[in-house]
Structure formats: C-alpha cells, structure tokens
Length: 117
Image (cartoon, rainbow, N blue to C red):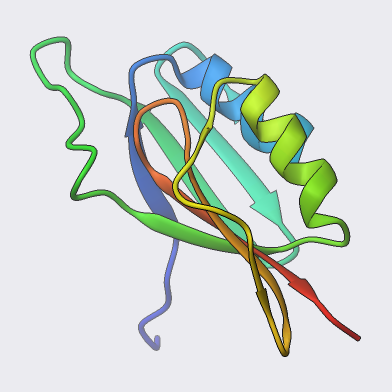
C-alpha cells in the first residue's frame, strides 16, 4: 500500500464551533462531529479536528495552514469574520486572482484564493 495523506489534523478548543465555521463559511461537509473529534471533507480532501488538551494552548504562530479556492473571496471573508475568524493582513489583488489569509478561532491559518478567470 502506498503512503497517502489521511487527514490534516488541527487542535481546537471548541471542536463543534470550529466544524461549524469550516462548514458554514467554507462549504466543507461535516461527516462526523462530537465534542472531541470532527471529520470534514471538501472533495477528496479530509480534515480532522481534535479537542486540544485543556492545558494546551494552540500556538498561533505555529499552526497548520489550509488553502481553499473560493468563488467569491469577499463574501467568504465576511462569513469567516462574522464567525470569529480574523483577517491576517489585507486582501491582495494579484494578476492571477485575489488572495487573503485569515486565522480561525484557534489561530490556524486559512488561505483563500479566487481566480481572476
């Protein structure tokens, strides 16, 4: 059997709240969600969320980064911010499209990309 990525795993203080953010603002499908564990999918990509130990504070400077292509970056940024994410710098307008970086509830980076075509 070949090596394959199973999940990108992130630690979160509130797994259900984080799963809701990824589902409602980014369109991920929630396959499983409990207080301590969630599994979400977007196409063939899987992400797992696990409850952080109570004595652990996820490091905001050293976290996973997920990059997501979206049809409307402005609308997605508004949704993410309304659910507690923070914009990490301005939306940038590049020749190939718009890009933005945000930090979700526990500081994990979310990169957004909207193609200019």
